Length: 419
Image 1 (cartoon, rainbow, N blue to C red):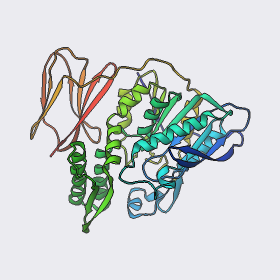
Image 2: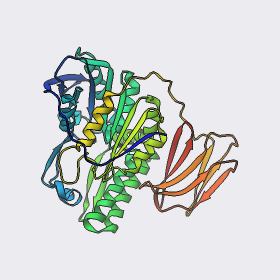
Image 3: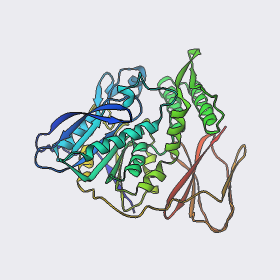
Image 4: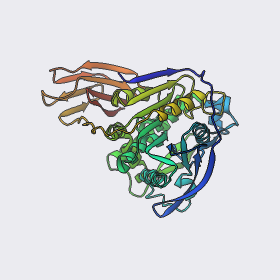
């Protein structure tokens, strides 16, 4: 049974000692990135956490100010306040014996000079690997205990960097998705229109534009050289650009394979998720829990915590989250266990009709034990114990749905969209 922790916010922060900070510049590709290295007081070497940003051109503290109209609706208790959750994490960990390296994202420092047509989420993985190499040069760091902590998009990136570098001892997912971005983003816009404007029609129109273009990317029919662009209500003649195909396709591919990448890393993993997260369904934490090795995985669900790791009315990372991260890192040990074999969907046929789905097993012998059908919110629609029966037929809801095939080694998920 995997470790599942349900936490309310009653922890008290204990700060021991004074940390020092160094301003660092390090190379990545042909670029130079700037960061801060926080060093605990006392004699090292210290375990170290490298903090990896979510989406967007973030600074090293991952600073965000909630001052727009959507923030007034979605985060009324934080409106006109600023958060810096990476600063909060670095300050707490370094005061409790754990070094921290955080850096400005390349899209912040070099955004004006990057080619928007070729920029990719793979570039951010390269930056993580460069940060790992820098950390390995420091004599005050325990290079046997390098932990990657990725927030949101960063959670999707860190297992790839860990697999590439082979120098990482543990992974921390902070509000990280299992649902791919080409599903999350449209549904976020749908929800914003419904919650903030009570306008389901406009929300559906915007979401469907995203879905249509993402589907073209998956089917290799997206217009060459074009940007993803959406016409918003109130300004229908001026579509808003959202970036080029390479960036989105690479991000979608990483999201599709996030569970496989975590399993391939085969490292101690801490999943932290709030139940008041607008961006990522809290049920994604349970999908992590179901898919990752039980002996290596701890899932911590926090009541009343949003996507930015804060309570609804406080702009600082919840003390319980900080203490959970620190305690977990101190107890993380490097592992050299064998990489688990990832189950494959080869030999399974999924047929989509207008009002139903048929799943057909082409071989009597297969590793799957259970089939779950769920919607985007994680709500289970159908559940089958898979035996000798070769076909399973069922009706589904309109919109995005998921087929999850379970084995004793993990889970493989296939998504499909119903008009």
